Image (cartoon, rainbow, N blue to C red; front, side):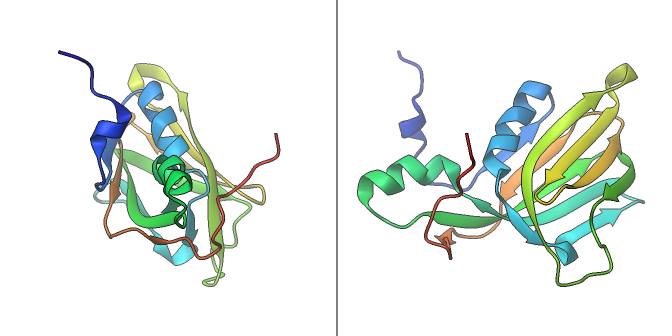
Amino acid sequence: MSDARFEDGGEGALSLRAETEADLSVLSALVQDAVLPITEIVWDAKARRLALLINRFRWEDKPQAEAEGRPYERVRALLVIADVTQVSSQGIDRGDSDLVLSVLDIGFEPAQDGAGRVTLTLAGDGAIAAEVECLDIDLRDVERPYVAPSGKAPRHPE
């Protein structure tokens, strides 16, 4: 018997949960460079849930797309942060319904008893912070992948 390999996963929609900081680092890498209109952010205080409908770059498919010489892809996905007690933002004009945001990173600052703050760092010095009772974040692809409109993979200076 051998361990599963990444290549064995085949094509399929992602459905992942982060409950630890190590888990979160995986989710953060998968949503890096995701874009979304500000109108696709919903804070449901009663359900204690912050949901974002993002268009994420399919980093997990990049090596295969390059090997096959096919276009890069994006996919619409739900990013849901549970057990949220408060949400705040900075550097974002929440009144601008045409604003498009780009996610750079998701971080977690732990507090006592598993609580803490989840911070989505956005391009352009913006951020969204969610105070949480525990780390519980789901990422689930909800549509079929589509060709990335730019035709390019996002790049970051090293």
